[in-house]
Image (cartoon, rainbow, N blue to C red; front, side, top):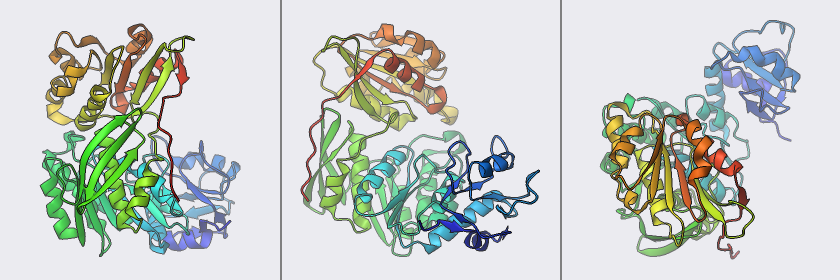
Length: 476
């Protein structure tokens, strides 16, 4: 196996010192997931990574990236000594980007960036070796870590870039140097750190600052701040293009739900395109259309990208739909929509619309919604607005979780109100009693409010049953 890093290469990249040449086949920041042959990076987070260097080496790490020699390891030859560990990781990321011939796609957005990253991985992975982070590694250490892990022989890479505060995206984008910058949406997320939605849009647009000279910028045309992104693209991108219902480039014409799939019709430069996405909802179709546009920008034929997109399905917590049996009676089932990974006003509205749009022949449509975090001074108002979304009219019952979502609960029509709970655990203990055969149940909320525990409680009380899905075919 070709090493990812040799000691000499890593020392050159970081300006660090090594006592011997070693070969690493991966890069790790966590001894719990470290694989034999990894370079262990001793970052400081809740605890100082230097405390785990000895353990990492015992587990088979090839070496450790450190800023000082940990106690008891004075004689170890398996250390890469640098002035600052995070800066050393950044230097590895920059060096990995410099040596690769891969086509790079950078993805950011207030919602949908991880799903879009995974759609891109699915499509591009069928065309060649595609590198992307397994998790949402999109922050100040996640982006350099993803780059540092990029195989030498990668043909494509997808780099997810996120932010919590102003000024974070630009430096990460300049590190990643994407050929394509894709912005999925701009919404009221992390509003506590920004003065306005336009401020968030300008921060998202900073991903274009890292574009290669002939780079392509792709953005969502349907959002209220689309002009901010369009103006940035005119300044920073050689090839600007947008997508969405209001787009003139990649236009989403219609969407229809079929079981756990969405069938979409689009028009690209006056040419029709039909594609499928393995999740229900127009927002997933929008992400898919953006992914198709990005893939075409790095040389993948449009029809091939559309066909391969059909193989993607959402992971747990991101809109996955499943049937669960209440007991051993064949038809005694409920449908669960697990969208509990995260939430902001835009993604909450999209998920509730999915629930509203699902055809229902029996049972009820029930939404379990938890607090949306980091929304700033308008958080109470933004939560209350959830109750006034048009999709709520099509629902039977809405249960709310968390102190902020109490604002939505109070604003709900009386016939839609279920119950309000301070914590997810309180609801998790009771949720089975709220469900009956034929119900469709959506669970949605920010990760910090832990509504995923409600999902776990529902699953543990029932039995999985395959959700009917149209068979996929592909012509070679």
